[in-house]
Length: 533
Image: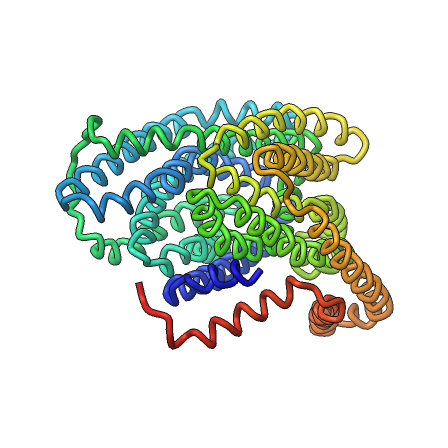
């Protein structure tokens, strides 16, 4: 354990500071996303109108995730980072201009296709919903947002360039800007345009995401040229690297599409309910699990490159235990407090008490999968560190069939909550399959140590959960007096529950909490010895 702590502490002060900034800004973006969802729920409730917006945005965003994210994150950033160190400025300009122009042309074509065929897409979705979806509104919103895929993709490329130059703050603020502009658009235009105001805000936000980053792009000292050099070695390398990741992301997004199709066929608002539940569940997952991976992934990559099998096992064990340490109590809290949390966040104006019950029930089943979603993050990166993208892809492709089958079976008994449960079961399958394969590759993974740790975590979470359950049951009659009582009591219970959990794990002498505390103590102690990059 001491070795792995020392390896972490080798990170430079600027890298650590940048990670903290990204986590803080990510939290800000998640909170603004909840504010956006609150505005949508309050103004429009859960209806076929909100389902139409959800689909109108999901379709162009799907192409952005599949093509732009896989190209930028998995391929462009590492190639560009090496290029700026090894090549001349002219070579870099040729490479960046070529990739940029290929993306512009490709996504203009995608946007045009979405714009032209919006009526046909809307007709298909309406048939799935039992001819209840408003095709006219879907077409208007889909056409407004069709070119958002172009803006988001170029914005993503700009983010990749800035991150390669160690500039993180403005790129990380991009989702926050998008969410705020959606909120402003709804408040200003909803009386005249209704749900279409959401689409206008989304398109405006995607444009401003790009605009705010452009002033900083001068740090790269790249002169844009309208040139496409298909023979450029780096251009070839980028597009050869992106396809395996694209296929993996495609499997995940196809699962999401299948889930949404089943939800749409269950009646008005179910697609929206599924999205709202997932966004609430994703709040702890998207902040804390990402923070753990941010610290661990560079370490795992170094260990894989040097053939340090024991180090990889230690890092994997630590990651699994830390994810469990954070996510299991989060799951406990979300399950017990699902109804009061959803009621506080969304139940106002057109979002009814029945809507609250629907989303809260879905949230229970989404929450059950949070630990496994977190474990998937680290397992996939374990394979990527070994430059093995085929294994996660094969498992993900098989999961598509399993997910579709489970959706079809479970919605018959549980409605839209069955879709959430199917997602959780598929995550459990993916984790189990990847662990079995990884164990065959590197041997024992420290299972006894992990099980011992998870036993203490489960015990601490169970005691905490029992206490907050009875606290809420006793105090909820006071919470319903007015909104401020409600907020104060619910937040007090959440904070007290967190404190109790930390206390219990400290008394159980858990290694995970001691590691986190010692990490920050050592960072503070060695701060004066750290140097910049």
